[in-house]
Length: 127
Figure (cartoon, helix red, strand yellow):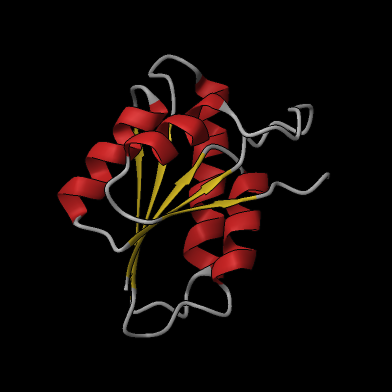
């Protein structure tokens, strides 16, 4: 399987890794993408930490690629899913901000509406 992981924080990545822990095998490929604004050093640091968590926690996969991108998160994830030809997109229900509401966020709603691949939306637990 080829998975695309969309993340914006360590909290989101941890929740996604919890979901993938029992699913990822050495035959699988995981592409983890963190989407962030170009001019926000705090967001860049958060993205780097989130991607590091993905690389370490998903080490059972045959290949784990990580990358930072800028732009609209939903657009970037949908375009990446198409370009990489993933089997499944895995995203958080909402941003990884510990103060975020428990509702499904706008990025998740758009990805669910527009994706042509299966999408798994994982809940983000309270910190």
